[in-house]
Length: 78
Image 1 (cartoon, rainbow, N blue to C red):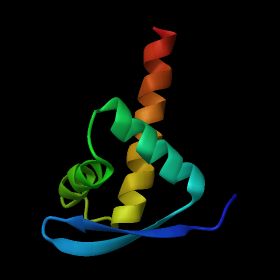
Image 2 (cartoon, helix red, strand yellow):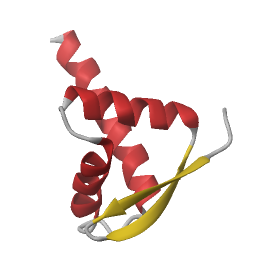
Image 3 (tube, rainbow, N blue to C red):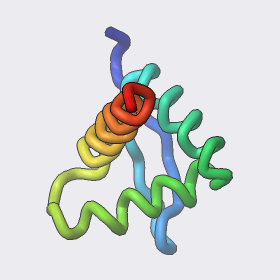
């Protein structure tokens, strides 16, 4: 597994940095393209949703990606 890569974004008017392993960055970009959203805007939607769970943003992104691909696999089985 690769080491985390740090990237900065502006989310809801403030700068923030995320550290994710390269495969997670790749998956995040792929999902953003599928949703037709700029990456920063997509990260912002995850950030807004995570406030209810109080998890860190990097962790929330990893969980979002996991849930996304699990659901996709279930949909393909049906």
